Length: 296
Image 1 (spheres, rainbow, N blue to C red):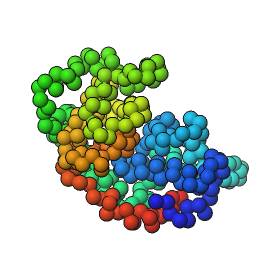
Image 2: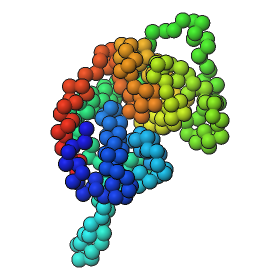
Image 3: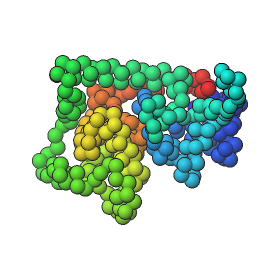
Image 4: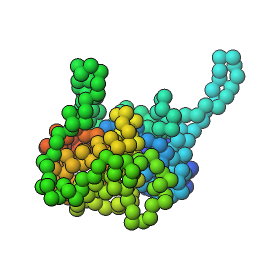
């Protein structure tokens, strides 16, 4: 929930003016953006398209992204030699240092609720364990099978229907291929995506085309963060969703996110052991979120 004093913040008022939309709409955009980062415990959202996809912005492409970037405004600064110049101030999002074209939420952890900070701590610990395991293994990164719990195998006759060779996946889908996506007809989807889609809890499979967009964005992120190729990234997402679908966390589908939200929130980054019991961090901190500090 947005803090009551948000509408008095200069940066927020500037964002409302740039977008020329009602305040409740703009608050909803910000809450959606923050919630994505809260769910995955990571301030990095991705490229401009991923930022607007995470918010599910219905307006003109690029408009909301540029508004979030420029909401910080500009101020006049005096250099050491006495010359004056204008300097842009951080908006609600900013470019990730050293990663041109990728964007993150400005100062997320300075204002995030406690449950988000706990998730970040768990993720940092998981990455540290992976680093140590890699060092013990002579510098080789542990295989995906070492890091992910193998879900309960499906019956042989079902497996035959869903299993494809690596060559099939490689030829049917390239996570980077935007041109191919545009050429696709309305009812045609990559085979690797279809495998992922069919593995997700059936009752929460909605907005298939939107889910495809988030699957592509998730694949790009996994490729960069884990140094994988297209096929390995698709395999990782498939392994994670199968582990999730077979876990207690997916048993009560009324509490399971819709497929596209599961991807946009970065739930595939969660360690499978976290799905063996309900994650109550967010419920326990719901009330404290109401009083979270205002983002500067």
